[in-house]
Image (cartoon, rainbow, N blue to C red; front, side, top):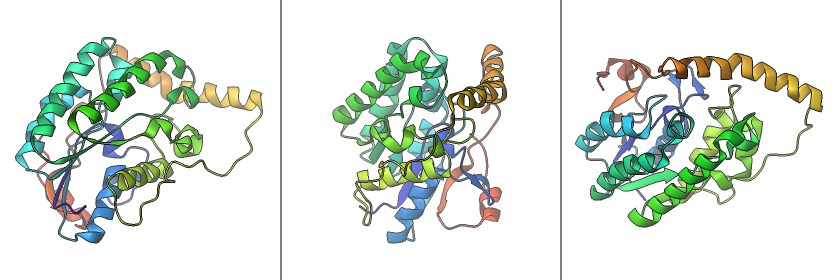
Length: 266
């Protein structure tokens, strides 16, 4: 497939957190996918409206209209993970997602969504979210079937149960994890050179002793879980007051100066 206007919607995953980039803070799987698409179409223009912390409803309210105005022919919109960890009514989440996806379907663009990795394997106490995660993944499969979307099944990728695919906070993918997500999207889109083995496990590594794992998990809770819980109790998000990193359709291979010069409204 060849596309000319690619717009990414979403949250921190699509913004690219966990994948540092010296040019402009974060790269991420969507940027990596755009770079691959540009290999076959150097004229591809790309916008990334994702902002960390956004729920499906916030993406609907803040990102949908700007995305439609760009008349994209490719849209990526994996949404809902922040709802899993912050909302209790999954029926409402389905309604919000359906509203977004129904509108995206009507554009006629190719739309890519995903399931979400098995956080019960990577996050201590992740079992608390298992039922809602499974519900969200079932929704994603249903939406993909109902609207003829392209689905990247991250839940079934063994590599994403490996801590090496995750940043130290275990909430965001590492550069390796983002690369594998981009690999999965490339394969789902049928891009030349993509591989069905994008989700294959990494080579085995020596797991730390049980006591060392407990100490590691305790450090993680103090450094990452506690601040997140405090923000949640205060009704705050890392995305409060932030604008999208790439709010306009611009050439994929633009320089950082051009990116900084683009308006940051939205």
